[in-house]
Length: 510
Image 1 (cartoon, rainbow, N blue to C red):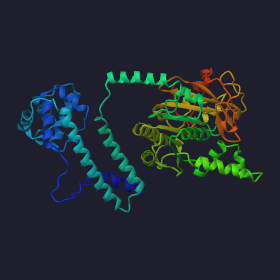
Image 2 (image 1 turned 30 degrees about the horizontal axis):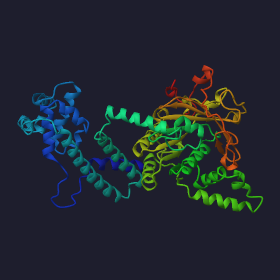
Image 3 (image 1 turned 45 degrees about the horizontal axis):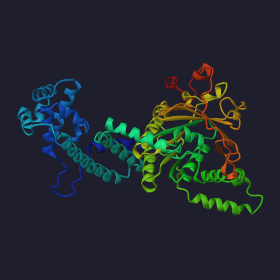
Image 4 (image 1 turned 60 degrees about the vertical axis):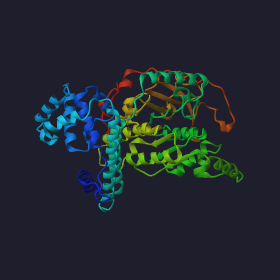
């Protein structure tokens, strides 16, 4: 059924005509401006650069003859040939398209309609707007017809719509005004002044950890952060902690949970924000009935936090994008958490590396489009377990090298005690038991931050005893330690082999 639905969508996307909502009504168009643009390109070489800042796709033109002429002009530019009346005519002859373009007489007429390319950018933006309106009409027509077809899966339909919208956005992106270098330098001065006056406060969204805030300045908008670890290291516990930090600082958070239910996550937050152990909340209950009053006070407090969770399994990247846009529009979320990357995607028949690559690319696109931080959890390959110290590295990211490529930061959680290995206190402080390893950071340095993990509450803190619930406020160094020295065999892998598609030598970043 899915194969048939895809074939039907592909066919209809190419063959569905625009619905005439009113007899005699023409699709939006600006033929005279299209003529002015093409004429300007053939008489003023400077016009080409200005036009390409707005669009460079021939489909933006309404008339077929204009599309053919523009394609000939683009061909000449790619060949580093001059663009004028004679060269365009010759290129059309080579492509056997001169008759479709209207002949030499039509080309001459285009050059006579305008004296310069002075206003080409203004004209181009209007033509682009007409194209966007035509696409909206066509897409609406396709949506209506497909929605009436009982053979079309509704989620496949919406994935198609997302793909078409993304294609339009790619064309429109070129029409956005670019920031000049001079203006960018002014913004540098403004940011430095803000940081100076800020007295070390978080400039982004509170991560929930003082040391991590210091390194990243808080989670920054448009950043895609990947948190990787083997099972049992506490990936979900970490993002629940950071979710609470964001929410308690007054910023809305979206959480797409592909592994845990909303109730399980809510239980984690209660345990982390109270003195109750997780076993009391999930298995044993309370020894004393009077504990319920404390539980009810904590639940009432947590209900006011701007946290929004979707726990549906196997969401596709299209569905995650739609949910993120909804959360942004309704709640103005600043952070979106996806737990975890390898579980996303509804098409399980697709190659796992291709599917994970699409998810990774899509999460970075969401961060840029919505101007939010996206945090994606990632499972690591079993190759980690075969190294002497079990400490993760970039080449251990499972299924796809795209994750490392797309991420602005890649961080790993490593608890030596989980493997019965002594904590290296030359790397992290004495009262920490977890290494938060920053293995890649596009905007800064790498290093290792010490955290403390409380297994009873499945909660991370900056250091033991820093939990505000217990009323402790211990001062401690926030210094970030350099990455530990490692044996080259541990870094590169003595014998990295494929294990159920866990690893690929081509993905090795080293």
